[in-house]
Length: 267
Image (cartoon, rainbow, N blue to C red; front, side, top):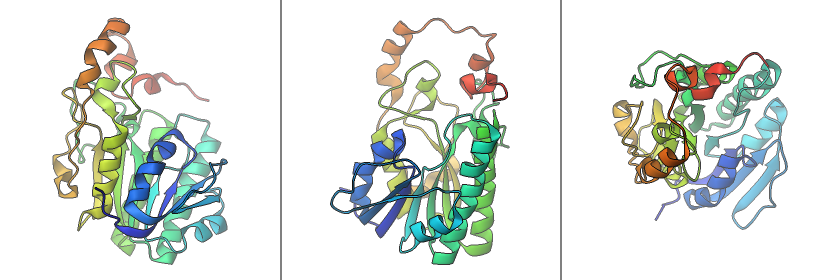
């Protein structure tokens, strides 16, 4: 059983795939789950508030954050897009969120970073929280910016943040690459819960994956968070191998951890 850790918890990006998957689960973490997105969302249910807001609108974000004790931030652009869209949602929008958190005294944020911060490491390498970022595109750059911005707000204003470098959060892995990057929806909820309830979070980087035998990510520097995955991509391994071709080792999408993101040209 998940013990509620906050009265009012804000989750941005509630209309997205990950937000929809976490909506019912995160209601167990709070008395009131405030849901926000720039896109329309399903109507509020018991214990929910639904607020449509654009992260690039500073005044709207200030109103959105008022009365919250913690934030799970899934909002923003989640794929490689033209710079203008990334700038407004992932750069300006994130600044607006942290400023609103500072003004309203919010002290804990779970920030959805991405494995694409590290996308230009090779699949033969293992990275940890101290490995220098190697973004594989503008989206990855925006998440690296978010990690730096959140660190500054921690150092200057004491806002604790877990930067969760999410891998592939889907019902099951779609291809061979995702056997290393996959995290189940239940493990994602376990990870968020650990970030919200650990006594001292500080500014932490943690890789968001399940307990996969094949992994490029070392979470030893985040043991203080208390995340223990219970699922694994291993149960899907045989089926994934059966339906996918042998990898072309000359293909950059096979060579690098970012997969196809490393080949996306200017948009």
